[in-house]
Image 1 (cartoon, rainbow, N blue to C red):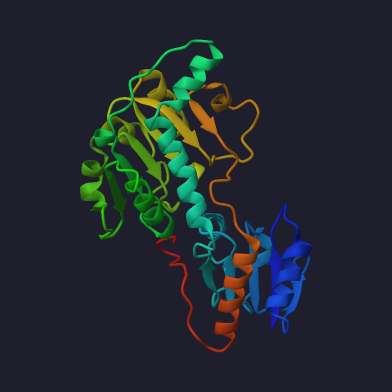
Image 2 (image 1 turned 60 degrees about the vertical axis):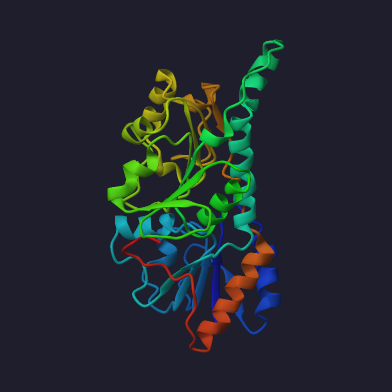
Length: 313
């Protein structure tokens, strides 16, 4: 079998070495501009349009991440760009869930214990004890209850805070109050003190973190966005912070990455910025999962993680 690999800004040699060990029978190569030679499978992250265009020989495209919005954006901009007969398959966890739970739990506990405010007091050389937030009313709402979202919600519930979750379709998760569908969206938001976004980025969810959403939260709420920058209406966040409707935000994802040096977010002390590191793709686990699925497809078997192109996840 022939496998194309593309991952910008990565150590391609290391990835190809690991894939060669996992699939010794495969013919592996890193895609270069102008490469139109036959291939059975493509393993990619944010591939350029010309890599996929016209490749009707591909049986499957493996996306090295849980979110496939970058690939679907190519199809949206130029319908038919995705190979007609190729399945689009996303990574399923591969060590991302524990990382994501650690990141979100750190951010939530930082706000619960007001460590962000203590950091400001330290910079001002002020010794002051702040009244803790009441844990029993410090409600956390998790937008998106996929593999990552469900794990995050259950982890947070373990700290004794009220946790509720929202998803497109009905879900039952032990210890979590769940809401589903557009009709229950406002009820989910009502009174939430920390809103955590883990939704897939689709046309339906673009811009969901907006002024209307923020207005439904508890006064002085917190926002944690670890999904995609396209979910957030940036000016609405700045205005919500200025008005006091939001007290602070932790952002790991942005519309433009890297975040430009002149972006207003850098100058807003109530916004905590990290460079898209909440859940990193782990090479060993990812290679093992993709290799297993390629082997299964080569035997004519079905695999999990296949993306519904119309839904976007």
